[in-house]
Amino acid sequence: MTGIDVDRSKVDALNAGNSYIKHIPREKIGSSVRAGLLSATTDASALSRADAVIICVPTPLSDKREPDLSYVYSSASQVARYLRRGQIISLESTTYPGTTEEVLLPLLGKNGFKAGRDFYLVFAPEREDPGRMDYTTKNTPKIVGGVTEKCTRAGSVLYSQIVSEVVAVSSTRVAEMSKLLENIYRSVNIALVNELKMLSDRMGIDIWEVIEASNTKPFGFQAFYPGPGLGGHCIPIDPFYLTWKAREYDFSTRFIELAGEINTNMPYYVVGKVMEALNSRGKSLKGSNLLLLGVAYKKNVDDMRESPSLELIRILKSKGANVSYNDPHVPIAVHHRTSTRLRSVPLSAKNIRKYDCVIIATDHSSYDYRWIVSNSKLVVDTRNATAGIRGGQVVKA
Image (cartoon, rainbow, N blue to C red):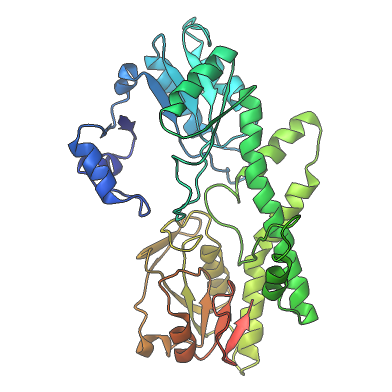
Protein backbone atom coordinates (compact mmCIF):
# COMPACT_ATOMS: atom_id res chain seq x y z
CA MET A 1 0.00 0.00 0.00
CA THR A 2 1.28 3.44 -0.92
CA GLY A 3 0.04 6.64 0.67
CA ILE A 4 0.28 9.84 -1.37
CA ASP A 5 0.13 13.26 0.28
CA VAL A 6 1.31 16.78 -0.48
CA ASP A 7 2.39 17.20 3.15
CA ARG A 8 6.04 16.12 3.35
CA SER A 9 5.98 15.93 7.16
CA LYS A 10 3.21 13.31 7.09
CA VAL A 11 5.00 11.31 4.41
CA ASP A 12 8.25 11.36 6.38
CA ALA A 13 6.43 10.35 9.57
CA LEU A 14 4.81 7.33 7.92
CA ASN A 15 8.03 6.19 6.25
CA ALA A 16 9.73 6.40 9.64
CA GLY A 17 7.04 4.14 11.07
CA ASN A 18 5.38 6.88 13.10
CA SER A 19 1.70 7.74 13.41
CA TYR A 20 0.61 11.39 13.28
CA ILE A 21 -2.94 10.46 14.31
CA LYS A 22 -3.18 9.78 18.02
CA HIS A 23 -5.84 7.05 17.95
CA ILE A 24 -3.90 5.03 15.35
CA PRO A 25 -1.13 3.17 17.22
CA ARG A 26 2.44 3.83 16.19
CA GLU A 27 3.16 0.10 16.48
CA LYS A 28 0.65 -0.71 13.76
CA ILE A 29 2.23 1.81 11.35
CA GLY A 30 5.75 0.72 12.23
CA SER A 31 5.14 -2.99 11.75
CA SER A 32 3.49 -2.37 8.37
CA VAL A 33 6.40 -0.22 7.19
CA ARG A 34 9.00 -2.76 8.38
CA ALA A 35 7.14 -5.56 6.61
CA GLY A 36 7.12 -3.60 3.36
CA LEU A 37 3.32 -3.34 3.38
CA LEU A 38 3.16 0.45 3.71
CA SER A 39 5.09 3.34 2.24
CA ALA A 40 4.35 7.00 1.53
CA THR A 41 5.38 9.53 -1.08
CA THR A 42 4.65 12.99 -2.43
CA ASP A 43 5.18 11.72 -5.99
CA ALA A 44 1.79 11.44 -7.73
CA SER A 45 3.26 9.22 -10.46
CA ALA A 46 2.92 6.35 -7.97
CA LEU A 47 -0.76 6.40 -8.95
CA SER A 48 0.08 4.65 -12.22
CA ARG A 49 1.36 1.59 -10.33
CA ALA A 50 -1.74 1.14 -8.18
CA ASP A 51 -4.49 -1.36 -8.92
CA ALA A 52 -6.89 0.63 -6.75
CA VAL A 53 -6.87 4.32 -5.87
CA ILE A 54 -8.81 5.54 -2.83
CA ILE A 55 -9.37 9.30 -2.62
CA CYS A 56 -9.90 10.50 0.95
CA VAL A 57 -9.27 14.24 1.02
CA PRO A 58 -10.94 17.05 3.00
CA THR A 59 -14.24 18.49 1.77
CA PRO A 60 -14.55 21.67 3.90
CA LEU A 61 -16.88 24.62 3.55
CA SER A 62 -15.78 27.91 2.03
CA ASP A 63 -15.94 31.15 3.99
CA LYS A 64 -19.40 31.58 2.43
CA ARG A 65 -20.53 28.20 3.86
CA GLU A 66 -20.55 26.57 0.44
CA PRO A 67 -18.91 23.26 -0.56
CA ASP A 68 -15.19 23.51 -1.27
CA LEU A 69 -14.29 20.65 -3.60
CA SER A 70 -10.87 21.99 -4.51
CA TYR A 71 -9.10 19.03 -2.89
CA VAL A 72 -11.35 16.58 -4.73
CA TYR A 73 -10.73 18.33 -8.07
CA SER A 74 -6.98 18.41 -7.47
CA SER A 75 -6.77 14.74 -6.48
CA ALA A 76 -9.04 13.56 -9.30
CA SER A 77 -7.01 15.53 -11.84
CA GLN A 78 -3.86 13.77 -10.70
CA VAL A 79 -5.60 10.39 -10.85
CA ALA A 80 -6.82 11.19 -14.39
CA ARG A 81 -3.27 12.07 -15.41
CA TYR A 82 -1.96 8.63 -14.43
CA LEU A 83 -5.10 6.56 -15.00
CA ARG A 84 -4.59 3.19 -16.69
CA ARG A 85 -6.98 0.47 -17.74
CA GLY A 86 -8.31 -1.87 -15.05
CA GLN A 87 -7.90 0.49 -12.11
CA ILE A 88 -10.56 0.89 -9.42
CA ILE A 89 -11.09 4.50 -8.33
CA SER A 90 -12.96 5.07 -5.07
CA LEU A 91 -13.98 8.41 -3.57
CA GLU A 92 -14.45 8.26 0.22
CA SER A 93 -14.71 11.98 0.99
CA THR A 94 -18.15 13.10 2.17
CA THR A 95 -19.87 15.27 -0.40
CA TYR A 96 -23.22 16.11 -1.99
CA PRO A 97 -25.12 13.57 -4.14
CA GLY A 98 -23.89 13.71 -7.71
CA THR A 99 -20.24 14.59 -7.04
CA THR A 100 -18.80 11.27 -8.26
CA GLU A 101 -20.75 11.41 -11.52
CA GLU A 102 -20.55 15.17 -12.08
CA VAL A 103 -16.94 15.82 -11.05
CA LEU A 104 -14.86 12.65 -11.13
CA LEU A 105 -16.45 10.85 -14.07
CA PRO A 106 -15.84 13.65 -16.63
CA LEU A 107 -12.26 14.14 -15.42
CA LEU A 108 -11.42 10.44 -15.60
CA GLY A 109 -13.10 10.01 -18.98
CA LYS A 110 -11.16 12.77 -20.76
CA ASN A 111 -8.74 10.33 -22.39
CA GLY A 112 -11.55 8.27 -23.90
CA PHE A 113 -11.70 5.76 -21.06
CA LYS A 114 -15.17 4.53 -20.15
CA ALA A 115 -16.29 3.67 -16.61
CA GLY A 116 -17.28 0.02 -16.28
CA ARG A 117 -15.13 -0.95 -19.25
CA ASP A 118 -11.71 0.66 -18.92
CA PHE A 119 -11.80 1.61 -15.23
CA TYR A 120 -14.16 1.22 -12.29
CA LEU A 121 -15.47 4.24 -10.39
CA VAL A 122 -17.26 4.01 -7.02
CA PHE A 123 -18.24 6.09 -4.02
CA ALA A 124 -17.60 4.35 -0.68
CA PRO A 125 -17.98 6.77 2.23
CA GLU A 126 -15.71 6.68 5.24
CA ARG A 127 -17.40 5.47 8.42
CA GLU A 128 -15.37 6.21 11.51
CA ASP A 129 -15.92 7.14 15.14
CA PRO A 130 -12.51 8.32 16.44
CA GLY A 131 -11.67 7.09 19.90
CA ARG A 132 -14.16 4.23 19.76
CA MET A 133 -12.70 0.76 20.23
CA ASP A 134 -15.64 -1.60 19.61
CA TYR A 135 -16.21 -0.56 15.98
CA THR A 136 -13.21 -0.38 13.64
CA THR A 137 -12.75 -0.22 9.88
CA LYS A 138 -12.79 -4.02 9.84
CA ASN A 139 -16.16 -4.64 11.49
CA THR A 140 -18.06 -1.56 10.30
CA PRO A 141 -20.14 -2.37 7.18
CA LYS A 142 -18.87 -0.56 4.08
CA ILE A 143 -21.31 1.06 1.64
CA VAL A 144 -20.25 0.87 -2.01
CA GLY A 145 -22.07 2.42 -4.97
CA GLY A 146 -20.70 2.46 -8.51
CA VAL A 147 -21.51 4.45 -11.64
CA THR A 148 -22.28 1.10 -13.33
CA GLU A 149 -23.09 -2.40 -12.07
CA LYS A 150 -19.61 -3.58 -13.03
CA CYS A 151 -18.11 -0.70 -11.07
CA THR A 152 -20.15 -1.65 -8.00
CA ARG A 153 -19.06 -5.28 -8.27
CA ALA A 154 -15.40 -4.30 -8.65
CA GLY A 155 -15.59 -1.91 -5.71
CA SER A 156 -17.31 -4.56 -3.58
CA VAL A 157 -14.54 -7.07 -4.33
CA LEU A 158 -11.92 -4.46 -3.36
CA TYR A 159 -13.45 -3.61 0.00
CA SER A 160 -14.35 -7.21 0.83
CA GLN A 161 -10.59 -7.77 1.25
CA ILE A 162 -10.59 -5.16 4.02
CA VAL A 163 -13.96 -5.18 5.79
CA SER A 164 -16.21 -7.92 7.10
CA GLU A 165 -19.35 -6.74 5.29
CA VAL A 166 -19.90 -4.77 2.09
CA VAL A 167 -23.29 -3.15 1.47
CA ALA A 168 -23.68 -2.64 -2.28
CA VAL A 169 -26.17 0.04 -3.36
CA SER A 170 -27.60 0.92 -6.76
CA SER A 171 -25.62 4.09 -7.50
CA THR A 172 -22.99 6.55 -6.32
CA ARG A 173 -25.76 9.05 -5.57
CA VAL A 174 -27.43 6.64 -3.13
CA ALA A 175 -24.08 6.04 -1.41
CA GLU A 176 -23.40 9.79 -1.23
CA MET A 177 -26.85 10.53 0.20
CA SER A 178 -26.53 7.66 2.69
CA LYS A 179 -23.42 9.20 4.23
CA LEU A 180 -25.15 12.58 4.50
CA LEU A 181 -28.21 11.00 6.11
CA GLU A 182 -26.04 9.37 8.78
CA ASN A 183 -24.43 12.68 9.74
CA ILE A 184 -27.59 14.79 9.38
CA TYR A 185 -29.41 12.29 11.62
CA ARG A 186 -26.86 13.00 14.35
CA SER A 187 -26.86 16.76 13.73
CA VAL A 188 -30.64 17.06 13.95
CA ASN A 189 -30.98 14.89 17.05
CA ILE A 190 -28.15 16.67 18.84
CA ALA A 191 -29.82 19.99 17.97
CA LEU A 192 -33.08 18.68 19.41
CA VAL A 193 -31.52 17.68 22.70
CA ASN A 194 -29.51 20.94 22.84
CA GLU A 195 -32.73 22.91 22.48
CA LEU A 196 -34.39 20.80 25.17
CA LYS A 197 -31.37 21.42 27.41
CA MET A 198 -31.87 25.18 27.15
CA LEU A 199 -35.60 24.84 27.83
CA SER A 200 -35.03 22.43 30.73
CA ASP A 201 -32.56 24.86 32.26
CA ARG A 202 -35.20 27.59 32.32
CA MET A 203 -37.72 25.15 33.80
CA GLY A 204 -35.32 23.96 36.50
CA ILE A 205 -35.17 20.41 35.12
CA ASP A 206 -31.98 18.34 34.81
CA ILE A 207 -31.90 17.33 31.12
CA TRP A 208 -29.30 14.64 31.82
CA GLU A 209 -31.65 12.91 34.25
CA VAL A 210 -34.44 13.23 31.68
CA ILE A 211 -32.31 11.55 29.00
CA GLU A 212 -31.28 8.69 31.28
CA ALA A 213 -34.90 8.14 32.28
CA SER A 214 -36.04 8.08 28.65
CA ASN A 215 -33.17 5.77 27.72
CA THR A 216 -34.70 3.00 29.85
CA LYS A 217 -37.31 2.53 27.13
CA PRO A 218 -36.20 -0.55 25.15
CA PHE A 219 -37.74 0.62 21.88
CA GLY A 220 -38.48 3.82 19.97
CA PHE A 221 -35.80 5.92 21.65
CA GLN A 222 -32.09 6.49 21.12
CA ALA A 223 -30.16 8.68 23.52
CA PHE A 224 -28.36 11.76 22.23
CA TYR A 225 -26.52 14.07 24.59
CA PRO A 226 -26.20 17.87 24.64
CA GLY A 227 -22.93 19.77 24.69
CA PRO A 228 -21.27 23.12 24.02
CA GLY A 229 -21.72 22.75 20.25
CA LEU A 230 -20.82 20.43 17.40
CA GLY A 231 -17.29 19.55 16.35
CA GLY A 232 -15.34 17.25 14.09
CA HIS A 233 -14.75 17.12 10.36
CA CYS A 234 -18.20 15.72 9.44
CA ILE A 235 -21.29 16.60 11.43
CA PRO A 236 -20.89 20.42 11.57
CA ILE A 237 -20.07 20.55 7.84
CA ASP A 238 -21.73 17.77 5.87
CA PRO A 239 -25.39 18.88 6.28
CA PHE A 240 -24.55 22.13 4.47
CA TYR A 241 -23.39 20.14 1.44
CA LEU A 242 -26.93 18.86 1.05
CA THR A 243 -28.61 22.21 1.74
CA TRP A 244 -26.39 23.76 -0.97
CA LYS A 245 -27.22 21.03 -3.49
CA ALA A 246 -30.92 21.19 -2.63
CA ARG A 247 -31.10 24.75 -4.00
CA GLU A 248 -30.38 23.34 -7.46
CA TYR A 249 -33.72 21.53 -7.14
CA ASP A 250 -35.55 24.61 -5.82
CA PHE A 251 -35.87 22.94 -2.42
CA SER A 252 -35.27 24.44 1.03
CA THR A 253 -33.96 22.08 3.72
CA ARG A 254 -35.43 24.07 6.60
CA PHE A 255 -35.19 21.30 9.19
CA ILE A 256 -31.46 20.76 8.54
CA GLU A 257 -30.71 24.48 8.54
CA LEU A 258 -32.60 25.01 11.82
CA ALA A 259 -30.57 22.21 13.44
CA GLY A 260 -27.39 23.90 12.23
CA GLU A 261 -28.55 27.21 13.68
CA ILE A 262 -29.25 25.69 17.10
CA ASN A 263 -25.94 23.82 17.26
CA THR A 264 -23.96 26.86 16.09
CA ASN A 265 -25.55 28.94 18.85
CA MET A 266 -24.55 26.57 21.69
CA PRO A 267 -21.16 28.20 22.46
CA TYR A 268 -23.00 31.50 23.00
CA TYR A 269 -25.40 29.74 25.37
CA VAL A 270 -22.46 28.36 27.36
CA VAL A 271 -20.84 31.80 27.54
CA GLY A 272 -24.14 33.12 28.91
CA LYS A 273 -24.12 30.44 31.62
CA VAL A 274 -20.53 31.32 32.52
CA MET A 275 -21.51 35.00 32.84
CA GLU A 276 -24.47 34.10 35.09
CA ALA A 277 -22.33 31.84 37.26
CA LEU A 278 -19.67 34.52 37.71
CA ASN A 279 -22.26 37.22 38.37
CA SER A 280 -23.83 35.12 41.12
CA ARG A 281 -20.46 35.28 42.86
CA GLY A 282 -20.02 39.01 42.36
CA LYS A 283 -17.63 38.68 39.41
CA SER A 284 -17.91 40.02 35.88
CA LEU A 285 -16.80 38.09 32.83
CA LYS A 286 -14.50 40.92 31.76
CA GLY A 287 -11.19 40.52 33.54
CA SER A 288 -12.00 37.07 34.91
CA ASN A 289 -9.41 34.28 34.67
CA LEU A 290 -10.96 31.21 33.05
CA LEU A 291 -9.62 27.70 32.50
CA LEU A 292 -11.20 25.64 29.75
CA LEU A 293 -10.78 21.88 30.07
CA GLY A 294 -10.59 20.14 26.68
CA VAL A 295 -10.18 21.69 23.23
CA ALA A 296 -10.55 18.47 21.23
CA TYR A 297 -14.01 18.20 19.66
CA LYS A 298 -14.77 14.94 21.52
CA LYS A 299 -13.41 12.97 24.44
CA ASN A 300 -10.15 11.01 24.26
CA VAL A 301 -9.01 12.23 20.81
CA ASP A 302 -6.57 14.91 19.65
CA ASP A 303 -8.74 16.24 16.80
CA MET A 304 -9.63 19.94 17.07
CA ARG A 305 -11.41 20.34 13.74
CA GLU A 306 -14.50 22.55 14.16
CA SER A 307 -14.21 22.13 17.93
CA PRO A 308 -16.76 24.25 19.84
CA SER A 309 -14.04 24.82 22.44
CA LEU A 310 -12.17 27.06 20.01
CA GLU A 311 -15.30 29.13 19.47
CA LEU A 312 -15.81 29.32 23.23
CA ILE A 313 -12.29 30.68 23.65
CA ARG A 314 -12.85 33.23 20.89
CA ILE A 315 -16.13 34.52 22.35
CA LEU A 316 -14.84 34.63 25.92
CA LYS A 317 -11.71 36.53 24.86
CA SER A 318 -13.79 38.98 22.82
CA LYS A 319 -15.72 39.80 26.00
CA GLY A 320 -12.55 40.59 27.92
CA ALA A 321 -11.93 37.33 29.78
CA ASN A 322 -8.44 35.90 30.25
CA VAL A 323 -8.68 32.35 28.93
CA SER A 324 -6.28 29.43 29.35
CA TYR A 325 -6.87 25.79 28.51
CA ASN A 326 -5.72 22.32 29.43
CA ASP A 327 -5.99 19.27 27.21
CA PRO A 328 -3.82 16.16 27.69
CA HIS A 329 -4.30 15.28 24.02
CA VAL A 330 -3.67 18.73 22.50
CA PRO A 331 -0.48 20.48 23.69
CA ILE A 332 -0.93 23.45 21.30
CA ALA A 333 -4.27 24.79 20.05
CA VAL A 334 -4.64 27.05 17.04
CA HIS A 335 -7.87 28.80 16.06
CA HIS A 336 -7.42 29.04 12.29
CA ARG A 337 -10.02 31.78 11.78
CA THR A 338 -8.37 34.15 14.24
CA SER A 339 -4.81 32.70 14.20
CA THR A 340 -5.00 32.54 18.01
CA ARG A 341 -2.32 30.18 19.33
CA LEU A 342 -2.46 28.80 22.87
CA ARG A 343 -0.46 26.25 24.82
CA SER A 344 -1.99 23.79 27.28
CA VAL A 345 -1.28 24.82 30.88
CA PRO A 346 -0.43 22.34 33.66
CA LEU A 347 -3.32 20.97 35.70
CA SER A 348 -2.13 21.21 39.29
CA ALA A 349 -3.97 22.10 42.47
CA LYS A 350 -1.95 25.31 42.80
CA ASN A 351 -2.64 26.31 39.20
CA ILE A 352 -6.35 25.46 39.08
CA ARG A 353 -7.04 27.59 42.19
CA LYS A 354 -5.87 30.69 40.32
CA TYR A 355 -8.90 30.62 38.05
CA ASP A 356 -12.24 32.25 38.78
CA CYS A 357 -14.03 29.54 36.79
CA VAL A 358 -13.20 26.17 35.23
CA ILE A 359 -15.24 25.24 32.16
CA ILE A 360 -15.52 21.55 31.28
CA ALA A 361 -15.85 21.62 27.50
CA THR A 362 -14.56 18.14 26.59
CA ASP A 363 -15.01 15.27 29.04
CA HIS A 364 -11.72 13.39 28.60
CA SER A 365 -11.58 10.16 30.61
CA SER A 366 -8.16 11.07 32.03
CA TYR A 367 -9.58 13.96 34.06
CA ASP A 368 -10.27 13.36 37.76
CA TYR A 369 -13.48 15.35 38.01
CA ARG A 370 -13.89 14.92 41.76
CA TRP A 371 -10.40 16.39 42.24
CA ILE A 372 -11.16 19.19 39.78
CA VAL A 373 -14.34 20.17 41.62
CA SER A 374 -12.66 20.04 45.04
CA ASN A 375 -9.87 22.38 43.90
CA SER A 376 -11.95 24.85 41.87
CA LYS A 377 -13.71 28.02 42.94
CA LEU A 378 -16.40 27.54 40.31
CA VAL A 379 -17.06 24.85 37.67
CA VAL A 380 -19.32 25.20 34.63
CA ASP A 381 -19.94 21.70 33.28
CA THR A 382 -21.19 21.39 29.68
CA ARG A 383 -20.87 17.57 29.51
CA ASN A 384 -22.38 16.30 32.78
CA ALA A 385 -18.88 15.09 33.65
CA THR A 386 -19.48 15.96 37.32
CA ALA A 387 -22.57 13.78 37.65
CA GLY A 388 -22.80 12.39 41.18
CA ILE A 389 -20.22 14.82 42.57
CA ARG A 390 -21.56 17.10 45.26
CA GLY A 391 -20.48 20.70 45.36
CA GLY A 392 -22.23 24.04 45.35
CA GLN A 393 -19.60 25.41 43.01
CA VAL A 394 -20.80 23.25 40.06
CA VAL A 395 -23.12 24.81 37.46
CA LYS A 396 -24.52 22.71 34.60
CA ALA A 397 -24.53 24.36 31.19
